[in-house]
Image (tube, rainbow, N blue to C red):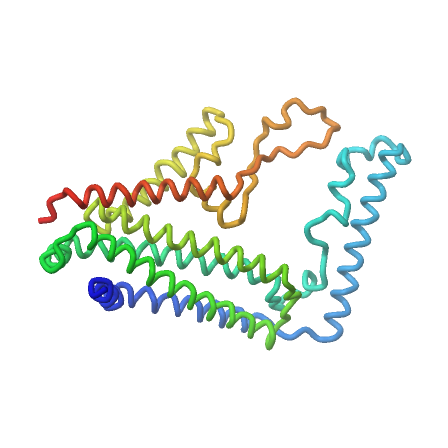
Length: 337
């Protein structure tokens, strides 16, 4: 327990951690201030106009669906067939995930229900960067300066010391992520109430937002552990930064380009960024022209394949777990001086 308390004090006392917290607060403050400055409470005339435009858009969708059904019954000329899919249920308004709403026609008005998810993605992205950099610098600086050696003189158990550092890091990042999320979403909820529209805040909205937030927190913890592990393997903070930069340039850019040149199928599923997006979004769809290569020209075909979140999570866990296990194995036997 004393070891964990000591590590928590060391983590909170690091200037880099304090600087990152300040930058986190500044980024949130700027985002909130910009949102408030660009929003206003809609007037009665704006609301009425928006309701009329949304109703007209829904009527247009219904008319298009009826025309598609009429096409299937040969009630429209053949030259209009290309306008509609072979399966009219694809454009049935009842089956759509989302229909036009008045908020879509209120430019300059912040709607919390519509903007909460994009704002939460921004928060998660910043926290992922925060966790990775703090995790890498936390162990990297101690290995470079000899702080780990001094700590082992007090507690001569390598794996216990490294596990305490990793546990303290993940616990600290988790608490910060939860506190930041509550403060961040509360601030924008207040903006929606006072300088915009709250939107439809039903149970489905909150459950969906909670699911995104939960997946985001897991991603933040995985990024923190990965930064910690890579810096441990490389014995320096710059090792983690260099590894990420090398991966992004060599594989995400160069590898993707080579795969496209050789016409490889489904290169997106080989990219870590695709799995991150699939996990965070609860799934992802990617384009594959070969899926509809044998379809007739008049048949409706979607050239997309899906990457589900369980597969994406498994890839992220295996990668992070492998890096962490390797870091502990190397740290156990390596000369630290």
